[in-house]
Amino acid sequence: MDFQKIFKTGVVQFDIIKGQIEANMDVVLANLKHLASRDISLAVLPELFSCGFDNRCLKEHSRHTGPILERLSGFAKAHGMAIAGSLPELEGGSIYNTMYFIDTNGSIKGQYRKLHLFRLTNEHKFYGAGDKVVTIGTSLGRMGLMICYDLRFPELARKLFLADAQMIILCAQWPASRKRHWHNLAVARAIENQVFMVCANRTGIEGDLSFPGRSMVVDPMGEILADAGPCDQTAVATIEMERVIRARKLIPCITDIRFDVYG
Image 1 (cartoon, rainbow, N blue to C red):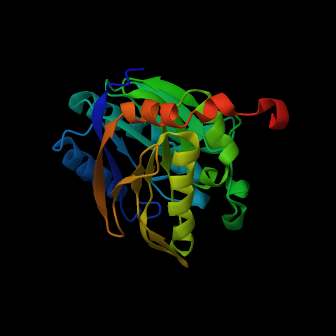
Image 2: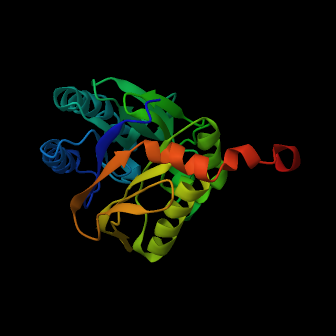
């Protein structure tokens, strides 16, 4: 890992239209083009950015995932920009909420199936649960992947830390009613694991839920480097990977972990 690496990351938030893949992809590509004009090396999109939680039509939507990944891979290669976000994945008769990480050369470097399914909105009735913690080596560093509700589980973030992730990428559809939790948990995960958190949320209203945006980038000491606010827009931050090693030298938590006591 090159701790001298400095690059810019952008988070994208917008009002996802349930089931309208082409309309959503038009917005995604427009935002990615905007970020490319700003020399961004990593763009993070919201959870299920192509179709939203259109749960009754997931099998149909999953058929578009391959072509969407091809379009995004071509864009990534053309602009030298890594892209991450989740899409419906069909395998073995189950649909998974899967985050894909496309590297700056256009290759799909890794994928992660959401581990924790949100029962309050019946996700467990429509999606299969993942069973693997995923970290990936990329051209920008070692990344850990998480999706939305995962943010509430410090055990997962700690597994990513112990697997040497220097950045955790999170895509979400996190509601406005719990926006304080979103902020506090993202900052906590960054501080306790001494990682960058790059978190993309959505905006808009769907049914009786509203979404606050507030996509953000947090550094390993808990400083918020970028906050997209409540509107449809992008936010950009400069990532200095050396901040990770500085934080871990200043407060050497990993040296003092008591595996002998709490495992």
